Image 1 (tube, rainbow, N blue to C red):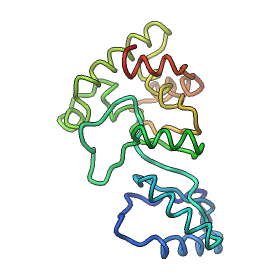
Image 2: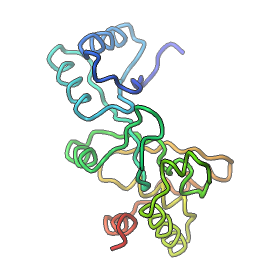
Image 3: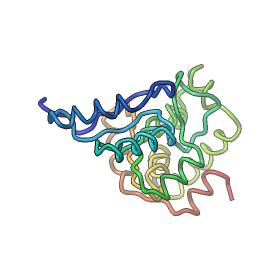
Image 4: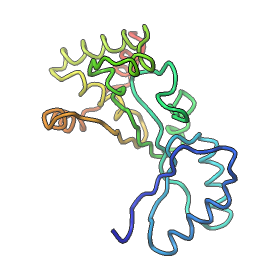
Length: 196
């Protein structure tokens, strides 16, 4: 390809100064190689700092955040440097309407009842067991598949959000595509989270 629409910097190192990276990003845009930038597994503070530098120097701002966001909570990071959006991150996205592109939006296999030591290490806890049970109950009530509800949850936040999914079959991809337009109410999202 001659150009990429998005270049997303992966796994930020908070000890590396941002100024040289912001300037190099500007060069890539000037050469016509990249249109937009984002941060994958970056903190909100670092994205804001990048954008502050970029604004001061007339260079490209980040326009996309790429953390983990899912109905499933995490016991610990899946990989070193992996970043999961917490309540403060979600509030920031809602306030700023900054786009979020979620990875492992279906809980890395937890909601599909995939059983591995890695999935259990990251996701197996009483809260996620209860959330999965409620998700399956809601799916039955709505005439949906459970993973469709898990996807609808992520896509129902009140800011621009896209969800990265990992279907293992054409059938799963078709089911998820069908759910991509479903939106849950805030009350339904809260019930999935807390059961009230």
